[in-house]
Length: 417
Ligand SMILES: C[S@@+](CC[C@H](N)C(=O)[O-])C[C@H]1O[C@@H](n2cnc3c(N)ncnc32)[C@H](O)[C@@H]1O
Ligand SMILES: [Zn+2]
Image 1 (cartoon, rainbow, N blue to C red):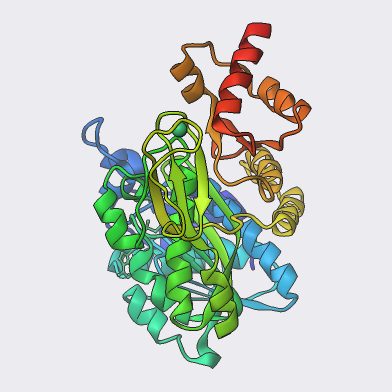
Image 2 (cartoon, rainbow, N blue to C red):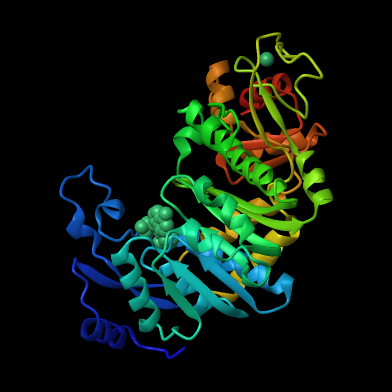
């Protein structure tokens, strides 16, 4: 790749490309790209600038893209070979361009967008960074493109789905376009369905019932992973969720796939339900809710509700998180510090109990001041329970302590404070 100073990059962009909308050059990771000048598209305070521009661009998603670079690099190191990546919803091309410029061992990147202006801009950004040898840009519908890559010799090692809203419309063709042991990354910004505000939409799209609990973002990850499991199983493919994160207005899931009917059968065993008591905050997992009576909370006797079917297996792989953390020490992203913290939490969460309590919620119920997370974690460990913080919520605690024990413990901790 020919290195350019920001001044050279700006000059080249001005000379060779004239966007028919206000644009500017930004630097992200190791690349310079032309993007819409967002300020020009805000007419009133309520306007969401990224969607108002003729080509979508959201600077807030830099963290999402940084993490993708680290995860894909970790995957490449594990695969120990040159890899191919496809990003079929690329917009300005910023993500795919970064993959080619920043990840070692990337043979080819295919990026595409159905929006013609996005396609032209992405093509320009590829040239701007001197990556035309390794990055191909297409102007195609994502499902059409992915279906053309469903044959064995045409498949990719990594697929990145970063859509508006839900990735579900693209999941089936994405799974079919992935090689054995490939990695699927999918963003979902439709948190209203996934977090239970629009429960019917969630059931329709993801095939599972959400629940408006304090740990709804974890449920969202599990609902998306469950949906991928079911779709993959239809093709005799199993999945392993290696990483996920819930950040700002979205969730993101990274799943490695493995060919084989047995793997798919094993995987289906990871599907199940989470039962929740809205009175005392008791929660439990159930592989088969019909095998036992689920109506009554075993701790307080209240009627319980449920979420699912969803993925009950692991949502982080410790080694994968460690590998990402190692990669993070080799780069200098604006978000490196933030990512290091996230990866430390993720590593600990990898083997922690499913779901987390949120201290504010319990304290509000008991009309107590909210204790510090550290004090609660220490007390839980002293009492012989597992206890971990969670990246999902800064006031969240993963523990195997029952809900009523948590209530007692919060009373104790606040009384002692
Ligand atoms: C959220 S944006 C992608 C952002 C980009 N990945 C990034 O990191 O900046 C979603 C993009 O998907 C494109 N899109 C929507 N439907 C599509 C389809 N059926 N096929 C291909 N592209 C599509 C839109 O034009 C838009 O550019
Ligand atoms: Zn209860």
